[in-house]
Image 1 (tube, rainbow, N blue to C red):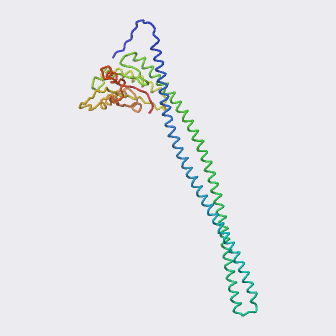
Image 2: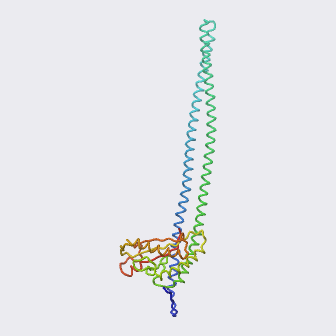
Image 3: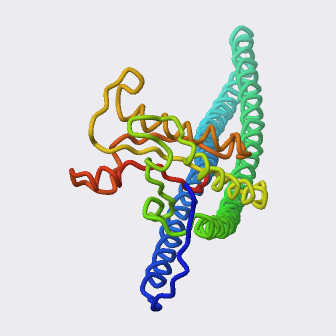
Length: 338
């Protein structure tokens, strides 16, 4: 469709410019809010991953604490055993003294009684030696437990230090992520503004092409006949202009900005049931795909463009009349992030 401009002199009207400025400001605010929400979502994912690591460290710390408590309990039991053995040793020593006294008292008695007493004394000596060996073993066990307790306390200190370091790293990562997201938002907003400005210059002011929010909206009749998804020649001419602008803008964007051109197909709410298009879903999607495929032939990278069909479920006008149906039949172009 050929573009034309009127060169008639008219009175200056500032109201359209004011509306455009206000619309642009609202578009920027809505976009910034959307990107901020998206950034917070990715940040929450990153923080969730760090929280998982922190939970694992806390569980390990809890296990070490439980083990320390068990070792302390075992140490207490060993101390109790040592006290019992010492008490037994004291009792045995007293019994040994008693037997020694009996042995002294039986001097001069019958040789049989003397031999029996000597056997009893030897038995008591052996019992005392076993008690001493047991006490030594318990002392060694207590020393080993003390070394284990020292190692556990050192491990707990290291875990606490690592936990603090992880918290610091999480805070640093969150700050860096916010800065990076803000930079990407500013860059994409600048290129989107450039894209809108170039389209306005090329397409001019036409009733079948308008800006709605952060999207350029073309009426379906610009590209397609009623109930069809085959591009008309005049529709291809409009897409040639659009494709040139997008290709130039894409070559200017840094490769690390994950931009994508989304092409959305919409229909009115009147049902369609044909062999080719069983529903409005099929018609809107087929139209979006047709536009995408044509733009790819004009140099738009296939990984930088996407087709989406919304059927009749995202109307601009909810009325049921010819004007509302015409407004709702549309193709929308939006530069967004993957």
